Length: 205
Image (cartoon, rainbow, N blue to C red):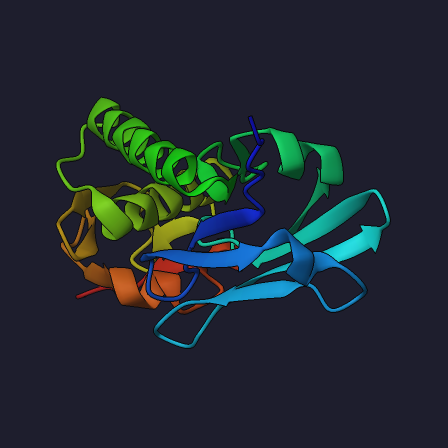
C-alpha cells in the first residue's frame, strides 16, 4: 500500500481594504528557497505573504482589517506539513485573520470564524454581519476608546454622543445640539481610523 502525500495547501485571509475573504492555493514546494508565496485579493489592494524565515519556519505577513496594523506570524514547517489548519488572530481584537492548511480544513475554519464573528456582533447588540460587521466592531472599539479618553465630543461643548449602527455606516449624534457625523464602512476601512486621536462633531449652533 502506497502512502500518498499531499503537498497542496490553501491560505485564506480577510482583505484589509474591501473586507472580503480571500483564498489562494499553493504547493509547499513553492516555499523552498527564499521566494515564498503570496495571495492577493481580487480588489488588488492587499495581499498575504508567506516567506521562509529559516529552514524550519515561515513568516506570514498581512495587514489587519481590524486594527490597520501589519501583523507577522511565525509558522513552523512541521506545523504546515502536519496540521490540518493553522489559525492566526489579530492580537488586538481576537478574531480570525489568517488560515493556512489543507483546503477543506481551511474553508471549514473560515466558516466557523464567520459564525463566531456573528455571535460577537449579536452580543454587542448589532444586527449586521459580514465584512461590515467586522468593520463596525472595529469602529465601535475605537469610539469607546476615544470616549474613555474624553476625545469624543461636539464643539458645542457636549460629550454626550449617541451612536447608531446601520448596515453600511455609523451615525454619531450630539445629544445636546443634534449635530451629526456619518462614518461609512468604506471610510472606516480605507483610512487610519484606528489611529485617530480625537473625533469632534460640528455643532449646529
